[in-house]
Image 1: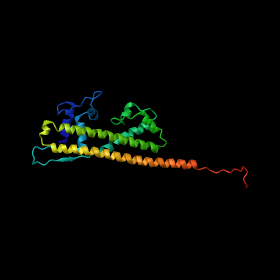
Image 2: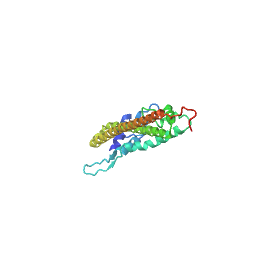
Image 3: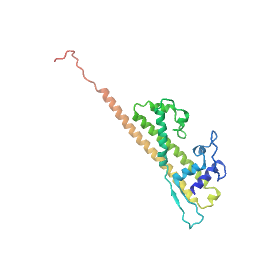
Image 4: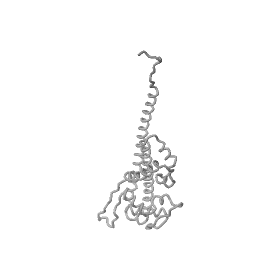
Length: 232
């Protein structure tokens, strides 16, 4: 039910027949959705992983089978791994990254730049470089999946109005799916906010401690004797 609704919504958004399975137009004129999911099957696969699905039956008395979803967070975690790998390759390399390489670690609306890569390279320690890359990879993976979740919600809302789906009695299941994806989006945004606040607090403490150590070092003066010929 969910998968069929997403497929219908995908094609409705593109102005195509609801059962079309071909790839969308790509390139310069591609829609944001087509850039994320070039085919309706890819959108369906994402929906099934995140939301699960409910089998459509022809009888109210027939038992329906449901497949549970995994939510957005596992996808964020799995998407972070290749982004982090690409970041490490660029930061540890000696060449300026190409635009294609930068695109592999960018997120919708926030493009990675050579200046950011250079700034990471300029950090004084390997630990600080790794911390910066971890944070950037996490933010990129989160941004990508939030965009997918927002698109998925739109596909569900469009697809449920398809006449056959609307007449199938699946509206409660689809409405529940819309509620679930909306809640998942809210949860990710909330957790991201909390992580940022915790990171900011930790960073503030570290910076304060570092500044205090620098100040104490500067104020520590080693006394030297004034008499060039001290008594032995």
